[in-house]
Image 1 (cartoon, rainbow, N blue to C red):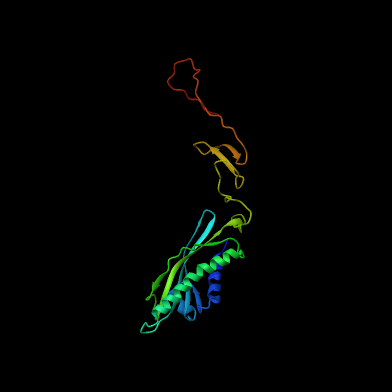
Image 2: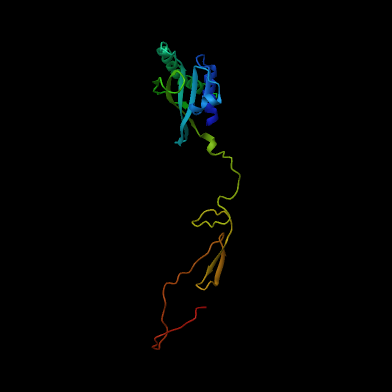
Amino acid sequence: MLTLNQDIELLNQFAIKHKGINSFYFGNESEADTDIEIVYPFMNAILQNQSMANGLITRTYLIIISDLVQKDLSNLNHVLSDTERICWDIPLYMRQVSNSGLLGSFKVNMNVNVTHDVARNDDDVASNYFDLTISSPIGNDSCNLPIDAGNILTNNYVYVGGGSMSGNYIVEIKDQSGNVLQTFNTSGEYVVTVLSGIKDTITSNVTTITDDII
């Protein structure tokens, strides 16, 4: 399974190696110019969402490629053309890395829609952007959890319903006056006899019968 940090490193390495990109930032684009020195052409990656389904961890990133334009917009089409081309390069590069097998099995959604933008931030830039989705199988990570051995339930919780229990507990059966009639340990097995009827063996006619239950 690829971690979030590995996804970010994949994108960062693409930006470092691509001849058409001079700087990279992962995170909110509004914070980029305060965290790094932006040198155009600039690549920005923003995590949109992440999910787990059918044994796959999937993350979607908003990828933005931008470059400076002249005040008179004379190079606008040139910038839009170049930044669009870089957008197509990203999923193609990711597929190359996936096919190499160096990072195990992961997939990139090759079906992307790239959009032009000429008013994305305060700089005089034009950009293209698209959603990039990377999926990788959980694999053995679901078995090798970083969890110490121990009780499943806390020691002050009595599990009812069968199966293994998290500890041994003493259960008390009391009458309505609070007297303890019976105690037993939850780790044992017990049989309860259920009263099914009362047989009247008194032959004389009386209206009230008082019998202490012992």
